[in-house]
Length: 453
Image 1: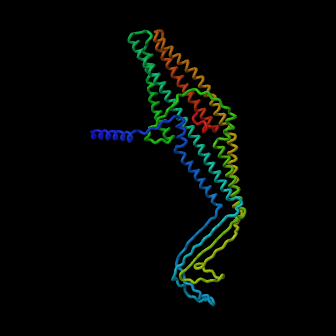
Image 2: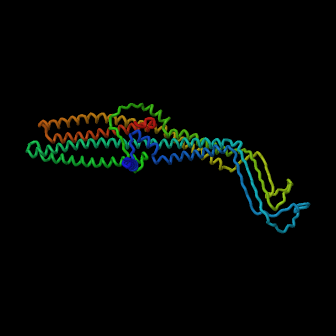
Image 3: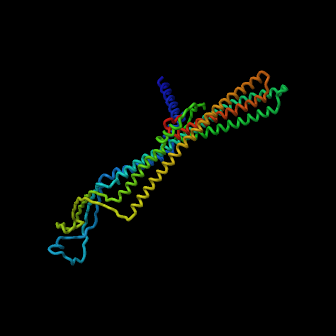
């Protein structure tokens, strides 16, 4: 009895274990999930994140420059013999050789505390802080590009799946029309002709080719989305796509331009870049003035074979001690090198100003271009919707006429072709509208706020 229960538990454990171990990993994402993973896990973002860390390290250096700089050094080695008798009562000058029969040890210490640097330390700090914000803005700029690319892939996948549904629908209609035409030919019905049959079979072959191409393109897009979202290659990725549909949107281009000057990463880079460049100008100018500091310097040395001389006029570096605290001033005079560096820093500042001018004139043009493209895409989507609805009615009517015996197969073939063409163009118009919205949001800097639209 117990052995049977025990066997059952073992079998259950094996089944559960194998299910856990061999179950295929799977990730399911919608548009929002794709965008969120892309801006977090895209492989290309790692380089930009490291740039931020570099400037954080520079900021740490700048912040630490205001603290004391301590230098310690320990030395040891062979020591020449030296005795007090050689200088007492008179200094002997007839020493023929030096005997090395001992060792010495020495520790030196220096503490340097900056007092006033005429803006050098604060300038480096401001430049590093600006560098962090510029790098963060560059990261956001890359994320914005990734969002747009992710949307492009997602809506391309949605359109491909809609096209597959259309192709299957057309395939069914063509197969039904081919079967009907073949039956009519066998019955020698006058309205049936082989030319129409060949035309229908030609259309069917083209539809099957398109279905194969759709399958290929869907697989390619799924692999691209895996890369964009950081999904491992051995993990199955399932994308839940929304059918393409018309979207009624209203944007005020003046408001978008105003938002862009606040939100666009490029504008943030320019603002912070100007602060950083101005700080570097101040740093170079500080080299024209003396650097004031407080210095504590000391040493402690001892040797096994040297006498300690207690005379302030005699200093033995291998067997003596010293401690001094002083105020100091350091000024470098280079006859034009510093002025050249100041000029170079000022030119770098002017380069950022030129970028600012370019952005202030170029961003409105970019937004207006995206805005007019959205207007055109929206109008085209409305027009193609009307054409698609009429083509659909045409197809239904042609099919009904044949069922009632008052229509011809060639009319159905023409209706199928018109329906397929207008439906494809309608889906392309809806895709263009989606991408026009995405481009406009990116151009205005709103893509992070409305990143799933």
